Image (cartoon, rainbow, N blue to C red; front, side):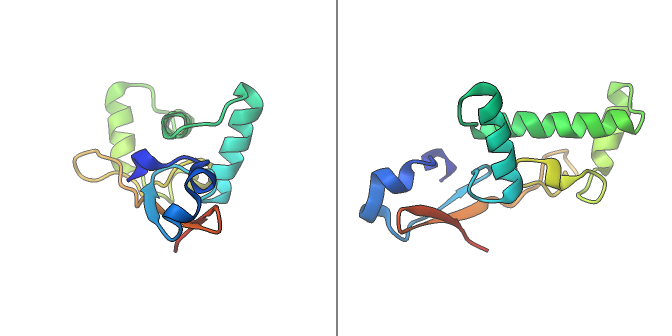
Length: 125
């Protein structure tokens, strides 16, 4: 599970977890946009981002996009978020996977699958 994710996991676990697969909603190694976010985060805070950092960043991306569309109230924000889908928001500026929201307003996303191979985390298709 994602709770086990750590960028140091392959180095620490080595051969004991070789071939293991884990899922996560944020890993800098998983996608170029995640790496870009992680590098910028580290430059600013001198710390590696967590999934909570990535989610907070993505909320800011969504709110910035909403504001640019003229959203000014809670009601209009809710309506905007109900209609958000990958084509509406620049998904490449988000750090974590995102596929819009479901009918109940919950975010939809497929977690990234990572495999430990040769002391590295490799993203699976």
